Image 1: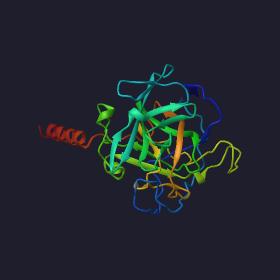
Image 2: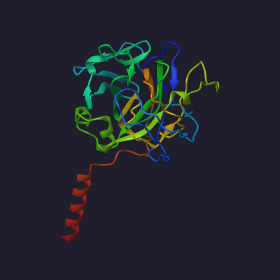
Image 3: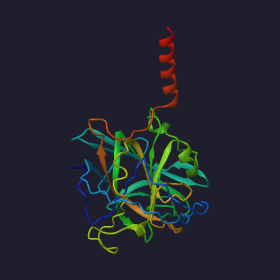
Image 4: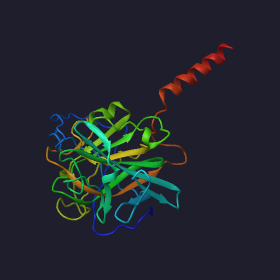
Length: 287
């Protein structure tokens, strides 16, 4: 495993993963009110936490550099992979870019809006980060360097055609409940009460939120990690995601590169491209 930046301190590790072929969930939740999550029923992930060795670990606890758009830019010389991290907030029903409030410290990434928690949270507004990689990757783990007493989270990935630029992704102006109808796939919601440490204890140590190896077959260039978004329906709810406000600092993510044999699921091509290809073949046969 190549670690991009050395980890510092004791971090609370949340192992989060997801699958394109997820189990159906009988989940119910209250309407979204931009102030914490609604209450859901408990649906087990039905698999063990990810135990493989990731290809790369991207650490967010050291000094990071921003680009002209205010997003963090990270690179890995051993693989030539790059990662752009941008900050986003849904407030009053509309998602806006909040790179001007995106920051980090020794515990990880934060979105530090005025009068806010200095974390990524859903207290009054839904905050999340967008991780854009230079090639499709499988995001198998993410870690929390610091949390509040409640830190439920939501994981999504881009399931559409690869955009020309990150700015072309449908985010700005949408409500979070419109994401899944705009080619974002909801991987799952993960409750902090599902957490346990590496020794199997439910208190103290490194908190591990396990969804098994569900993400190992998904490869996408764009992933969203945010405080629990109650108005997004996901197929996996790990333990009971409650209605309290959620707070965390994102310290790192682990990713796997797509195998050379081309295995795994990738976002589907644009529908228009498929139609055009079909018409071309049909015309060729007619002549």
